[in-house]
Amino acid sequence: MKQYLEFLKHILDNGHAKNDRTGTGTISTFGYQMRFDLNEGFPLLTTKKVHLKSIIHELLWFISGDTNIQYLVKNNVRIWNEWPYEKFKKSNCYNNETIEEFVLKVANDDEFAEKWGDLGPVYGYEWRHFEGKDSVKDQLTWVINEIKTNPDSRRLIVNSWHAAYIEKMALPPCHAMFQFYVENNKLSCQLYQRSGDAFLGIPFNIASYALLTMMVAKVCNLELGEFIHTIGDCHIYSNHLEQVNLQLSRSPRKLPKMKIIRDVKEINDFRYEDFLLEDYNPYPLIKGKVAV
Image (cartoon, rainbow, N blue to C red; front, side, top):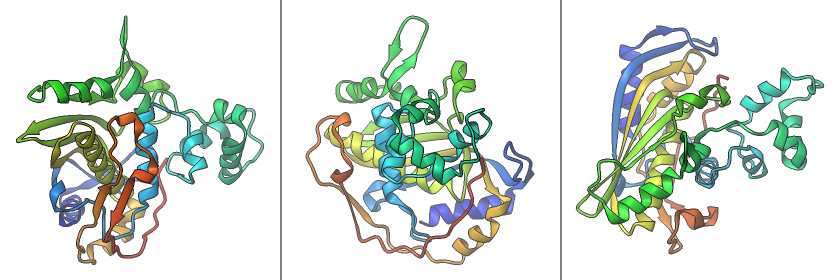
């Protein structure tokens, strides 16, 4: 995807050194937007192999409203492991377990998972249980119903940023809110992401919200429009520069195709087996360490 490579180059050309919460250091710039026509192919990077299984399972986990990593680790999805592990390491229960040992306990011990695997009221909770003073709102269900009955609405928004709950979250939402838009029977989605890890996080976010748009379009009987990705703090971590330059040396290949192979009617009914990716021919995986 040339849009993504242009994004990386924009950060390198316009960014500046900036300290960050993790102490790793970044090259950072503020404000960028990418647009992807979902009829041109599924926006999954070809300049490195991306682990689609993790993207699908994480999205299904969000949609379910779950906030405990047990479901993810049972499906061999590692992307959230570091945050609860770091919390566990600071506790009196920590006995020099490695992260691998911690994850194994979360997978196999329900009591341990309940105590140490939960991330607090992160994405899925806010999507499905956004708490107000006198009520709880299932934002995702509301938005889907509104798309079906009032597609011209300008209020088709799901907000993950619950300011009163930020301190309760293992990680405050990076992809903070998204909005749907219907035109000529086509569904588009715009994501506002307050903070974007350009090398590790952004490729996942692009594919995840493109897939979410496909899923919502399916249950609303709409065609596909665009995914629009707006990012606030765009950054490359200092320990990812070699990996970024390797990607920039590669020419993008043709985008794959994503199919939903079952006639799913409700957003809660999607399963991992419903998705089929075709013609994905990426360059090899490029590894990078996540900053926690």
